[in-house]
Amino acid sequence: LQRNLAMYKSIVPELVKYSPECILLIVSNPVDVLTYVAWKLSGFPVNRVIGSGTNLDSSRFRFLIADHLDVNAQDVQAYIVGEHGDSSVALWSSISVGGIPVLSFLERQQIAFEKDTLEKIHKQVVQSAYEVINLKGYTSWAIGYSVANLAFSIIRDQRRIHPVSILVKGFYGIDGGDVFLSLPAQLGRSGVLGVTNVHLTDEEIQQLRNSAETILEVQNQLGI
Picture (cartoon, one colour):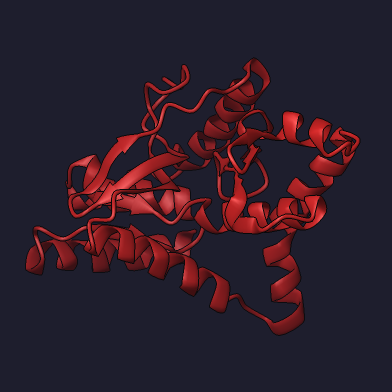
């Protein structure tokens, strides 16, 4: 964090100076904190500073759910929100397969619902980057593909919904400070066009608030 913070202090003002109308898409880790840093250093409106957030996490999540249910990943709608990291929140309550809520899908396919199995899937998502780093020393292809996906949505004004790191103050009772976390947001040529109002259970809301507190603790030590 400190190494990237030092670089951002020299890079971001120069970007703003020469490209005052640009959109900043932050990928460096810890992505949520550095998206906040980029926003503060740039002075840009919040719709033009976006972190890659849990876009990749959510793709991995959909793949693993599809693999578990033996369906095509493109038919799975599922999000991971909150921090891109250990305190991320898997939105089990809003998962659907082919438009059918996952609990109804499991019932129709006579597949037993095992919360432990679903929690293991979430854990796999969180640990997958560590596994890649242990095997080859760094991550590249998956995050590269994910960020290209975000860039296409913005440049081509596709208005697609992605779970990306945005300013979440005021959402789901998060009001402790300016914090960036991932929520499903619509992206287009002007950046963030809006935030999708996904229904969260009380447990998921509390987990999201805990995630916000985790990030705020780090931010408060930066002095920005």
